[in-house]
Length: 280
Image (cartoon, rainbow, N blue to C red; front, side):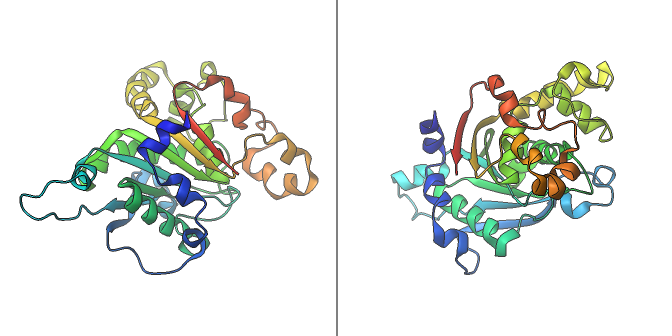
């Protein structure tokens, strides 16, 4: 299953284990254009957390070829480009798209340049300000915005070819995003005060809203071709049962009653047609 992912983003495996990329310094690359702090939510949706509803977009710059030249490299640069969406880590309680001494920015630039893909690094609201599933909902909002707007920043991108890359808590979000029923996502996007649900039948949103949003939401979810999960958390029960971690973040992030629902392993039987790569 992973081969199709490497074919589309051939440098992810190399990038994910490249120590110089994770820890090295240096200025931004000249072969990648960066659009910073793009808001993916309306003012009403962002409320009083506008910075947490932004993303940075890394677009590879096509090299100019001499007039009349033709090469395999030219074909690579003009082909339809994938969109990789990177979700940062930080135990759901800290971090942002420039976390770890700009590590995520360097990683995004490297992926964009070496795989000729457009890369977005997204922010999302953190706990204890919000609880699950709002982290997932925020990331999904960013996907909705990218699906509708990314072509204005890079006409070569194929918005129906999306890959999610998550690190730590971001890996949990990326994985869980693929499992929650579309009705559950619609319910939480419409009503952020609603409690989490593993079941689509418990949605409190009106049936008319569900029907109105099902098509655009489903299109975005069906555009996700694969997930790269780096050092992710897939079963929260062991953390919940450990005294130190339960007090540190499980209670504030997930509450006491949603541990099973928030664990991707609980939904693993729902995988359909996507490649998953787990790196630990």
